[in-house]
Length: 76
Image (cartoon, rainbow, N blue to C red):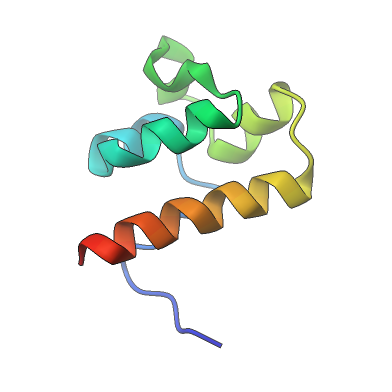
């Protein structure tokens, strides 16, 4: 199993913080229906909270987070 690096995204991170640090992840979140990435709520809501509010299952959230981490790791 891969060790988490310091830059790994987790579902407990704030949406706004993730987009600010890794703007390239916004399109992945938008594909999953989280069009709130630019919304004022994104500064107070975690990825998990936003995803659940938009009807995503735990499995979908984990898949989305995994996709975002794959994307940012390719850039390292």
